[in-house]
Image (cartoon, rainbow, N blue to C red; front, side):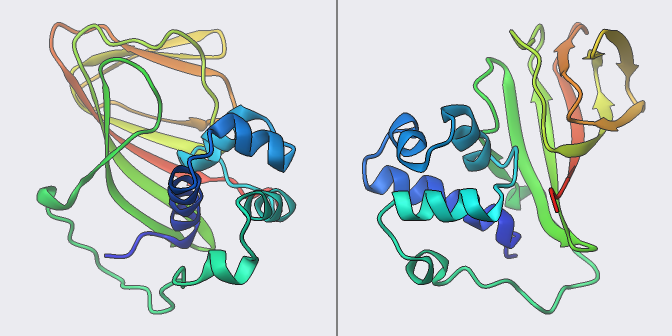
Length: 193
């Protein structure tokens, strides 16, 4: 199954940057953006605007034709997807101990990119800081018990509970149960246009 074109772009940026042995900070400096923005783009946490994308591509010493070569979208969208558990792929979304993501499916839905992932939170796992994403987020807790902090309000979720929110709000979560937790996460990315 092909990943969505937006996700391919972020992977391509990361791949080329690493091939050229350019650090995230060096690329950010060359493109005139923050190191955090480059990291968010490479890890599918935000979608770059066209001018930012063009600056990044030029900063990688490529022309747009070279960059987009082999990044064609699939015009024939399938209507039904069966994804076997063996096809899930590991995904590095953040550096936080005990947070293991697996991508289930990534497709464009109604002209907006959607990313489906499984998040396993090891017993006692928690973030050190609040995060934001340029996406609406839907979370379904398959097993375990978690504390979700959004802005200044806590939400305790137990197996079978779900939550939907605007990821641009500062949020954090921690596993407060006595075993590992497993959560289905759906990100519907917000376009800036």
